[in-house]
Amino acid sequence: MENIDLTEIKSPADIRKMNLPELKQLASELRTALIDKLSVHGGHVGPNLGMVEAVIALHYVFDTPDDKIVFDVSHQTYPHKMLTGRMQAFTDPAHYDDVTGYTNPGESPYDLYSLGHTSSAVALAAGLAKARDLRGDKENVVAVIGDGSLSGGVAFEGLDYGATLGSNFIVVVNDNQMSIAENHGGIYADLRLLRNTNGEGEPNLFRSMGYAYRYVKYGNDLKSLIEMFRSVKDIDYPVLVHINTIKGLGLKPAVEDKEDFHFSGPFDPETGAPKYEEAKDAPEDYGDLFARIMLSKMKEDKRVVTITAGTPGVLGFNKSRRLEAGSQFVDVGIAEQSAVDVASGLAKGGMRPVAGFVSSFLQRAFDQFSQDIALNRQAATFVVFYGSMFGMNDETHLGFFDIALLSNIPNLLYLSPVCKEEFEAMLDWSVRQDKLAVVIRTPGSSAVSNKNIKLLDDYSMPEYDIVRRGDKVALIGAGSMFAYMSLAADMLAEQGVNATLINPRELSSLDKRVLDSLKDYEVVITAEDGIIDGGYGQKVASYLGESPVKVINLGLPKEFLNRYSYADLQKECGLTPDSIAATAISALKK
Image (tube, rainbow, N blue to C red):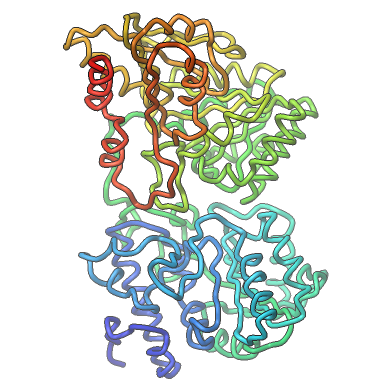
């Protein structure tokens, strides 16, 4: 069969003209194009390769965009984008960055939501179905969920409500036996039973909830998928279609190592080896540092437990380290709320729990931080990774809201180390103490050393570290911003301005003794790697508000920024050393 000209596919209408052999050829060529792009560009590899046939079948059978498809997480929608008018972004290297890695309504009417967090598709689709029923319309509504997302609480809530609709509501469960790493949670035992019995096993959670249940044994077989989707199209009651797929299909290294190829940088498509090796003298990252510290502590004290919500790699816990940690390493699945509450329960039970989160994901558990940790004064430790303007920059994965979110919760101590020595000292103290709930925000990704930082034996009370004493100008740099403030202080010194340089250490309360000593200064500048509104700097400004000193808060705007340039954003926000120094000089002149 001749190759299909992928550039001629402008919408799903173009593939609905194809016969089955042509659709199979299309699947092969989409997969080849995906591997070609991902091997040089990076991205979500396994999820997309495993969903090629399912996406083709969905758009072949359902009348999209009139019929609605909501993809959970949406990191598996590269094939969907290829079939819905965005092929060039996957076939032409000059246009590889034209689209985001997730669904985006700004790109296409086929994308219903901007989604980058898990477990919400079923509830979102249930709302769409209810709206359709209230309007008296008849379109199909389909939710596609997988990659471990069923472990998230809102997935259960969505399934619970969706089962009551009494109208067309189709849930497709993409079961590839994986989350980001291996799956965790009791529901996956049910899925395994259903796979092993060709969908006939009991108990069946989905039937128990009220869904008609269908099973596709070969979830990468186009004929089986098309027949199944045709059988449920226009159905007038809730149905769940369980498809058994292979994550990473078509790329041998991705099938053999599903965890590392969930998301990958550029790689050799033959061997799977990274194309760009890290420099041998590159600094250690905070994930590796954290894992080394925690493994040591868990060996010394059986009460110490490390917790993740489905992202063990972020914490530096690869497969071998998880094995080494044994039962003292807990993965609750992609369920941040449960992770926080499990930590609370462990603390209540006399353990020393330490849970690690990606900044963007921990916001899902705000209520648990507030109620089940802080209100109940449970001494658990939480470590925040990628809490930075220099981390992931897609609008769905921003990591700079956590300071404003968590530092304002009562009874929650929010620590912000500026270097690896301070991070390790804070973590060591927090695990040893049993009085306070503590959040520790890693300062960026690279664990950089700073021997000038004074370490404490006890971080329970606000005590600023005055690294350099000056007059007239004070620079207070939180976390990763401290290094830029330090460089700015050097620049000011060259201009004859001797600035006081302060590491605040914690962002949830103020060292009023030090702040009182700054009231006769002319300028105090704060800088933080988070939004200004509700952030640390505004606490300082509020406290010093009635004094003559001018307080300037530097930080990020309260916006959903999307795929921004790190360097440009830092410059725009005045967070470069030269900008900080210029701000201080300008304020002094006024």
